[in-house]
Amino acid sequence: MHFIHDEVVKRLNEGNWFEEIYDEMLEIFPEKFINHPYLRPMYGEYHFVIYDVYRLYHGWCDTGNPTDLFPAKSEEIAKELLIITDQKNYFNRARQLYEEGKFQLALHLLDVVIKGTNESSETLIQVYKLKVKILKNKAGEEMSFIAKNILISSVNQLKAKIKELRKNSP
Image 1 (cartoon, rainbow, N blue to C red):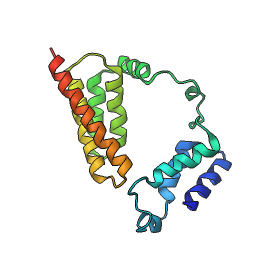
Image 2 (cartoon, helix red, strand yellow):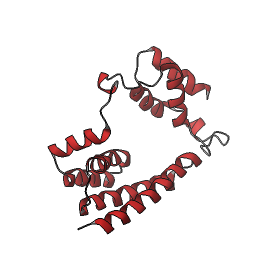
Image 3 (spheres, rainbow, N blue to C red):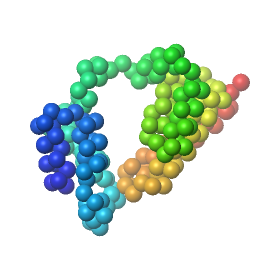
């Protein structure tokens, strides 16, 4: 893991922010480490180590964007975004991203609807169902015990939420 440490510190010293460092580290992480039998991500994984090294030396403010220094609540941001365009547009775009294999980006768009909506609707139920589908896919591909369990726990919580929404639907 010296490789990750040294490369993250190098990028910090170059003035890069977390998002840049994280993306670069994913691109340059050597295949010999990815396929090494003793470094397989059974418990944690190298993605987590990138965060850890960054926070060790830099602290919690990780974007370089002053907007993030005193962030608004994500629910308030989501409600404002839903004023600009409705749930269905976010859902349709998220579904399109899912079909293109851009799962993480689709999850972010689905979360706008989830965080910005207070009342049950068929669209909201569909949003939760797509999120469950994506998280199941990610869990099936994940080797890390920690990440897999977080994904599976989230799926179970979201399934309960779907049942609750169906019960409260008009």
